[in-house]
Image 1 (tube, rainbow, N blue to C red):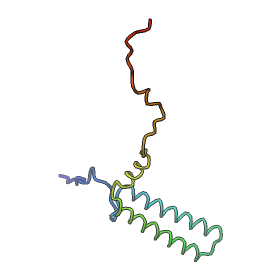
Image 2 (image 1 turned 60 degrees about the vertical axis):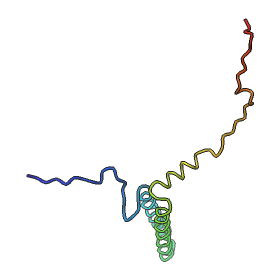
Image 3 (image 1 turned 180 degrees about the vertical axis):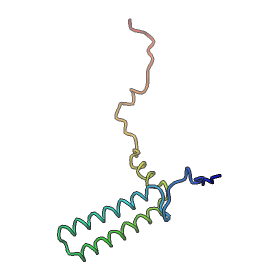
Image 4 (image 1 turned 180 degrees about the horizontal axis):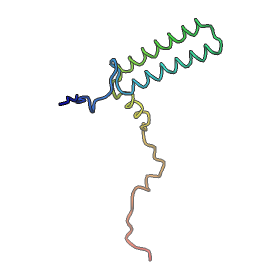
Length: 110
């Protein structure tokens, strides 16, 4: 008989080294962006030490910011912040107030 392992992580969020959900995409996208930027600068002819310094500094900044956002806002924090930005602060109504009241007349016009 064959033994099959059952995946018991179904329904849970993806986690890697403490980073959860959308922070993984920010982390990977940021590091990929820094890598591409350093490669372009190196091919253009910028000093290799400058490219190395920029790449290491940018990578450290991305890692630090991603982990701090994960710690501060939690798993669904960035989605809540983006939803809150799209929510109106107050509702503006420029119609006259009398329009909302329906006055019944005694006589119907024929």
